[in-house]
Length: 172
Image (cartoon, rainbow, N blue to C red; front, top):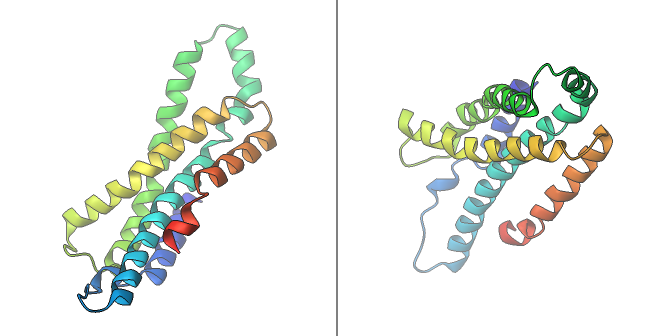
């Protein structure tokens, strides 16, 4: 599912921000400079917030869903909580690194970056992987506070809305 969502988001970013970096700044036209700056801010915000939101929503349910099994195995002393959480976080991060890779592989070639080579692509993947990693760990740690899946999802949505309160003013 993350592959399909990554492909969709890559196509969406490519369609919305095609050739966004090709606009030349002008000494005479404040409107051209304003539009170019806002388009770059829009790309930066959309790329970063998309990665954070997708990964936090994908990760938030990991612990509440597995809580009954975890509590039973913890009561039987099969492992310690530290070992469980480290293994769960490591396994999830390995799976969730796929999403920024697919998003970047599709969208990178359409933005018109100055260096459209492999190193530029790796830089773009890394730029998308950082908020994805932060969102994944946010969802994982935030999900440990709730026993109910619905409560965890609602709380995550509320916090994401609070994180993005100024975003419309910044990018529009």
